[in-house]
Image (cartoon, rainbow, N blue to C red; front, side, top):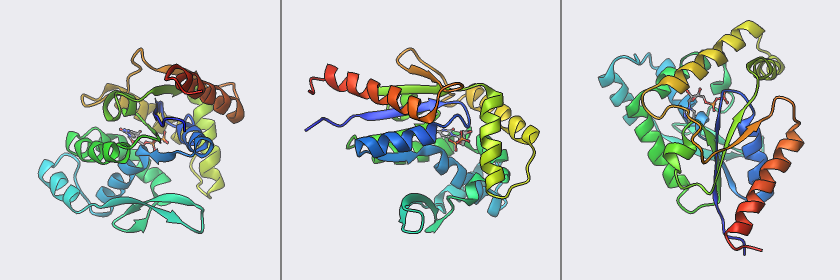
Length: 231
Ligand code: CDP
């Protein structure tokens, strides 16, 4: 039997990390974990409970009241992020959450809690996790680390189309501003900034299809498995 590995996919906002991670997990029969959904769920809790990001005491107290897990949805045939038992998978994609999530994710108390959960989820290998710090902090020993990016305008177009399809009337400019601002905060924060260290393989998908990116990534997996002595 093939030895399972962990796969870390990090990169800029809205460049399709989740899509690639999900498709790789399906092909390899691995578990897909969207670490961003966990930060988004915490941000949603902060919004719903008027938690002030600048008030450390409030934040620490709030974290104790948050329970996150992934539950299978028969309706959507996928695992969905649940905040205190209720699926918030759709709600966390809205703009009010996107507007504050990077500030929430810059808090060390939040990161500490979520990284611990993520490491636990990956301890038996066979996980494809996407985020910003998966290859640098969560699984520094991941056998495959992919850094994804694409032109920011292309990323904004894709995310705008996605939001539009769910009935949102947000403008293209607002989406572009949000992506630019999240990338800036994510790359410049003190705790676990988004960084491409030299053990990552770069995947710029500005001009390649979903199918092509999957093929490239699966070839990398194969190469690593061969190097590890698997047939
Ligand atoms: O899918 P999208 O690129 O819009 O973002 P996401 O993966 O849902 O992540 C939302 C936000 O959570 C990011 O902009 C980061 O601020 C934060 N995040 C993080 O700090 N570390 C992670 N491992 C994953 C997400």
